[in-house]
Structure formats: C-alpha cells, structure tokens
Image 1 (cartoon, rainbow, N blue to C red):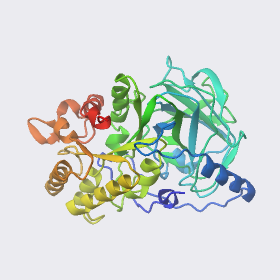
Image 2: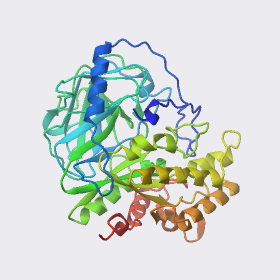
Image 3: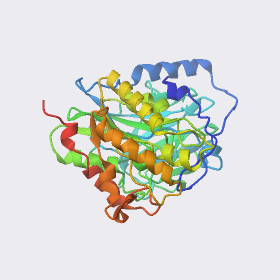
Image 4: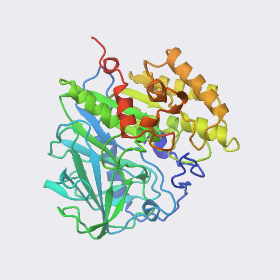
Length: 444
C-alpha cells in the first residue's frame, strides 16, 4: 500500500475559491464485519495483479487509459451516507484504446472492508450520453476468477483482464453492485460527468436506465481503467488541481485539457500516449488546513508514479497554496521557497523512477475570490523559477497562453469560465494546444 493510501486526510474545511461546496474532512470509525480470510485473499489479489509502471525506456503493455484520484467524502453528500444494496453506474472516458481491459477499485478512505457483490462494464450509448444507458454486450468483471471481492480499508484492487476492446475516446459504463452498507465511500468529487445510483438491488446487468433514479456529479470507488495495447507508447499523467480536473468544462463533454491533449496525441498517428487525469479540485502542493485530497507530495506515488505505463508527468499545482495561504494566512503557511521546495521533491521522485516531469506555469487569477497582491507576487516568482531554473525536463507556459493581453494578471475573457480562475471549454482546448508534442516525443 502506498503512503498516500495509508494517510487519512486531516484537512478541516474546504476553501476552494469558487466556494462551490464545503468538503471538511471526516474521521470515520465504523465496525468491521468481514471475514479475515476473505480480506487476506483480497490483499493477495491486489498485490499480485497491479501492472507495474514502466520507465520511459521500458517495455509498455498495460497503460492507464482513464483515472480518477481518490478523495475523502464530505458530509451531506451521497458518499458520506454511503450505499447499501444499490448499484452505482459510472461513465468514464478512454483516452487510448486497446484490449483486454482491467478496472481498478479503491477503498482508500474506507474505514471498513468494502464488499463488491458484482461488477460489469459495457460501451456507453453514444446516442443517449446523459443517461445510464448501455450499448452492446455487458461484460462481467471478475477478481481472481470470482464475481465478488472484498477490498480492505485503505486498499485498492485491480480486476482480472476483461475480454473487451475499447476505442480511443469511447465512453464506458461501469456498474458496481454494493450489497452491504458501505459506510462513507471513497470518491472523486468533481467528475464533470453524470453518474447514477440505483434503487435497491443488483442492476449491473441492466441495459436500460429505469432502476437508476439518482444522478450525481462524482465518481465512487472507481479509480482506473487499464488497457493492454501494443500501439500506445506509454502513459502521460496530468497531475494537478481543479484546473486539471476540468472544473468549468461542460459536463459530459470530456472537455478537460487532458482530454484535449489525448485527442491531439491520437491525431499524430503511429504510437500514441494515453493521458491519465489525476487532478483534484482544491488540491495543493503543501499540507495545510482546508480540503481536497491528500497533498501533492503525499499522493504523488499513488496517483502518478505507480500508474501503469507511466513515462511522463505534467505538473500544474500551486494556485490553491498561493490563494488560500495568502488570503487566509491563519490557515496555513506559504512562500515562494516552500512551493519551489515541493516542486523539487516531485522532480526528484520522478527522476528516481526514470521518468520525465514537465512543469506548467500557474494561470493568472486576478478577480478570483482569493486573489491578493501578495499572492500575485508569489505566483510570478514561482512562474519565473519554472521557466528559468531548468529543474523540470521541460516547461509548458500555460500562463502565457491564458492571460488577458490587456491585463496579464487576469484570465483572457474568452477563456474564462466566469470565476476568473477556471477556464471554459475553449480555454482548456487552448491549454492542450499549447503543449509542445515534440517535447513528449523527442528525437531518438
């Protein structure tokens, strides 16, 4: 188990500048009631079945086609209440194709073992993408040859290979039946995609939508789609905060900048790279009071370095450290030097694995709820270090592309979602277009 999986977040309240919802952390202590033998078997399956990450020059077979970083549930959400004798149906986006496939479930923030009664995967109905409808055959997902599994608290579990091929940019529907009370559920809060929760019962085999009566904009327990492909040269991990998570993009349109980058890569032809989106809304480089997933350093191994097929990481983090740290100085400490020190730790960890890591400059944010002049000074100093230090293997200057020509401290209005912090669909496309693909495919 990685350190990030063992770490329970101690963050006490959400301070996202858009102030969308409160996500204070909750500590859970619910009684365990699952046989120890089953737990031990699940641990064995988890340890033996996860494909290893590949160094940049290593052989690639399994790659991460889709991912979602796990988070603690917040009070008042579906995740906080948990599930019981219900089926959760989730829609995910394949950044690269291939087959067979494997699916990863996580109980990273569960306090008790999670009983998975049954799980299926199918192609989403592209003619009805806003619903839980499926198209084509529904494939059974197994774990160590069994239809059910138990995932220990704090652990993750990768399925057996499923004899199914997926196409690039295809939406899949994954259905998970949870027969017992789960307790608070590990989640990914900002999915930018509708998922569905059923009425009572196992509805994993349902092609129709009648049983799926509750919609949600979060993912639950599902954390990865792993694909076998000889045509994909490896995985790029997009690692960051809400801007990488796609907040402000059109729900259901797969219009986050990592999605747009995957489309650009696919258009090159020949061997391509998959893109794993490991953004978390509100996430930060530094530990501090607040919310929104483990700190970047605490989750970097789990969410970036351990991804199957990983060869490159793009880091876009720091705006929440600056915004919250300067607007609410009583909550946490921030400085240019502290942010740079965290970047250096990520760089060292990536290089120790033989991976390349690219630094992205922080977007302008004047007009956002937590903008301060002192924070702007730190942002400019950090961006200058990213551009000139040569500490990263390459630089992506998102700030230059996204700033307003008439006022460089603000987002360009044509790219502004409306909160002066998050881009809209056009802005995310501009970000993806700003990435030099030759940097990802260097000669030789």
